[in-house]
Amino acid sequence: MPVLVKTTLDGRKLEVFDQGLTLGGKLEARDLIPVAEHPNRAKILEVAPDAVFMAGRVPLNAAEAEIAQKALDDAETRHLTDPKLIEERFRRLMWKRAKDPGLD
Image (tube, rainbow, N blue to C red; front, top):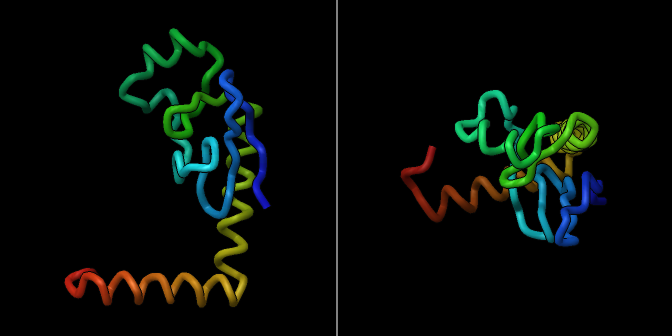
């Protein structure tokens, strides 16, 4: 079940789905980057002065970042404890390995 983080000015939804952040239904990021560590922090703060984190191209304020990080943490916990999700992760890894034998 996706968790809504915010709706952008153009109406697209930034949601945490599975273990990533999607924007308008397409994967945008797998984690949050602090604005203080971002190489374009000056431009980000110029456009979004209350931005604390970036989710791909989307700036997040403290409240939005808290919602996103909690949902990402919950998803990771589910993926580490649910036997079906663990099995699916191994299945995907085996498929990738079969496709690229040099992958380890």
